[in-house]
Length: 251
Length: 321
Ligand SMILES: Cc1cc2nc3c(=O)[nH]c(=O)nc-3n(C[C@H](O)[C@H](O)[C@H](O)COP(=O)(O)OP(=O)(O)OC[C@H]3O[C@@H](n4cnc5c(N)ncnc54)[C@H](O)[C@@H]3O)c2cc1C
Image 1 (cartoon, rainbow over the protein chains, first blue to last red):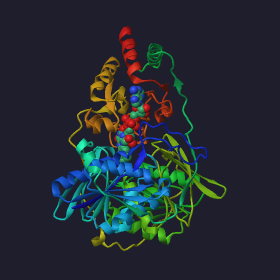
Image 2 (cartoon, helix red, strand yellow; image 1 turned 180 degrees about the vertical axis):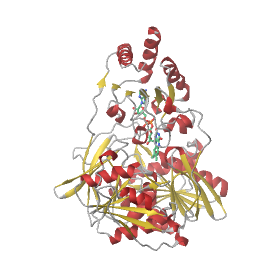
Image 3 (cartoon, rainbow over the protein chains, first blue to last red; image 1 turned 90 degrees about the vertical axis):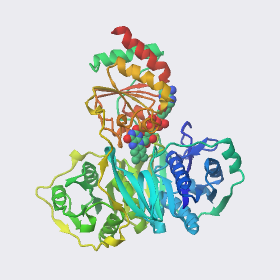
Image 4 (cartoon, chains in turn brown, red; image 1 turned 45 degrees about the horizontal axis):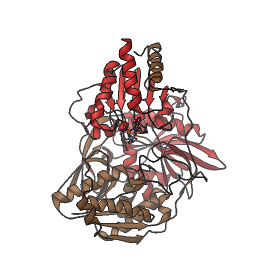
């Protein structure tokens, strides 16, 4: 079982988000980064499938040189090797640009399974995995909460809206987009971190495709609702809130 | 012309599809709606009550249950035959599953999860959230039409759909679907074991998010809930981590509630959470980030550390009772 798992480097959840002077992207020059959350679950699922069925896990990330940090992290958690698809333009690229870059890097590997997170916390396209599948001629399923492999097929549990689920069976090779919460994440051990230093991160160039989507303006959304801001000491806030709840007869 | 892709289930038009029809009508462009499935003429007739140009109906036994491969093949044929400038669809789970594939098949861009669209300087501008709704972007699209656009649930109002004086024509469109080429084999949808708690009946809900930091602090939220006679609920990451059971999750993949009071503790306000609670009568948000998106829908905003404020609120409630 040869599994490619795509991991995106995104701003850390704790980072304060500020628009750049041009109003087209965020200031990320000295920001903290981490692996996009659903991609962490995709990586974990890949590692678990390898533990059950044997094989190899290849972590793939597209972006500037800094994304090798998340590849190191993936190697430390247990991926066998990594591919870095390098191009600075990939940070702001649209979903098709990123999908093309990743797909062409993975194509020569001839993998059985490609896992991605279902969407990224920054751009939130939710498209890259599905577009890759189409490009590679593979079937796909999205928002997956369970994966089991048997007899050259994969049976997956698709999350639907409002607490509904559905099992779907697909032939291999296939692409799955993984939902957060599918498993419990493991974190890198010291041993893993040491081992990662010896693992390969192969650099490949991205296919030069131009984005068709451009951000004309990036901004903090306007508020539409009338909001009362409660300020002061904790005790003052508490007093004011409890009074407001009583006046509105919600308590 | 704007082409709307309809979604339906159990013989009914998805509410989100009506929102998209309303959005399409509001552009002032001619609108057509396409319905894909099997034995779904009733759905097409229902959509034909809207003031649109026509409803296209694609029926095939291979389309009886939704599959990404089947829907992509069927709708790709329709989009190629119709000269649409935009193809609009609701950003549902089903759309997430096949519309990127459809767009890729036709090599046309998809602007996903938009909350608005307008014409400006002879071009469409699409508004979409980024960075988990902390920012919004105006997006421009290059290249030949059609451009695919998915609209976030709730960003347009279904009750603003314009109805026609009489039903518009339903035009059957023949497409040939090779059922052997459909690679997904879906089973019947199901719900996990019966839900033990029904939060939809609760008058007051205290809901916790990742700001609660660890399972050891859930008791603090429980104390607040007790003081308010409220139910305890949570955002998805809390349930994923097992700090509260799944049946207390609020949002698109959990329960949808509309209590008198929804008190959000350390919840950022991602859209998938918001759709499950925005109908609440009064929303109080406590979040240490003054720019957290949850404050956009709060009636009362408390930009503070929940670990300072919550004990004070509990003390205040208990001192008065
Ligand atoms: C297809 C899909 C379905 C989904 N379904 C759901 C769903 O049904 N329900 C759901 O909730 N989510 C759902 N999600 C996930 C959703 O997108 C968000 O990731 C999630 O809601 C975030 O949860 P949160 O607000 O608790 O965490 P975060 O976004 O991490 O926010 C934590 C907040 O806590 C604040 N905070 C931290 N410390 C403190 C403190 N000491 N005091 C006060 N505030 C503090 C921070 O400022 C931050 O705003 C879904 C996502 C997808 C893609």
